[in-house]
View 1: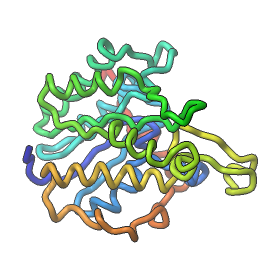
View 2: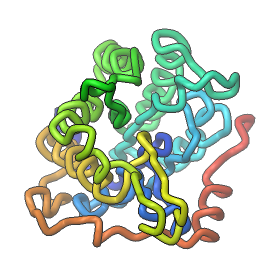
View 3: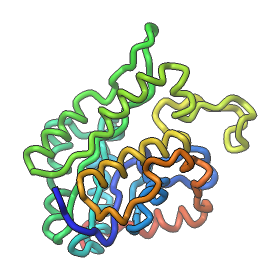
View 4: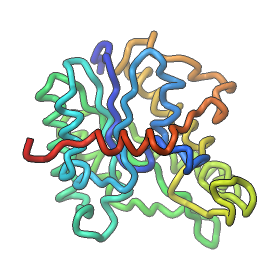
Length: 260
């Protein structure tokens, strides 16, 4: 589906998409390295750690995006990792509240002449005792696929891609993709960390490359917007982490009161 050139690409999602501040490096969401592959468009990463489809709307973050959209802008929507959590302010059921909030976001974007794209969440990097990848996101990716089909919205199936990629890597290989650090490996995590949800920079680059390649191959942005998609030289070395105080200010400012 050809949408023409998008002036800007807004990202709405959770910690799997979000930029991370310097104090969290080398943790990164896939939205953080996306500008390395899409230098010809302005990437506005509004994703926030801990956001579900419900809380992103209820706390005014989606309203902030909608107020600024111009015709031709692109909005990538990626939720699911947090929607499955049990707390009342964030939980949604896959084929009920989750789809309801996704549809509302899609309609809001289209009402402003912009173009929504749904992106399924990457799978967690958890393997069972026999070395089989567990599909812990359950029904959220299928629910997003159904919403995309029902609303005729382009879908980037990062979940299915990640399942294949994590399986190839295996239980040991995913340690280079997710935030697995031994004590002393990084000053931000002096005691080490074993995180099967959040990506380290190298994993974020891989996911961003896939998302950008899908945007190019499906003509969602003009060909001139892209760079280095086949280059092995684009690595985590090119990533930047905003200073903590800059990150905090962006987080505070990119929200609107829901009543507005």
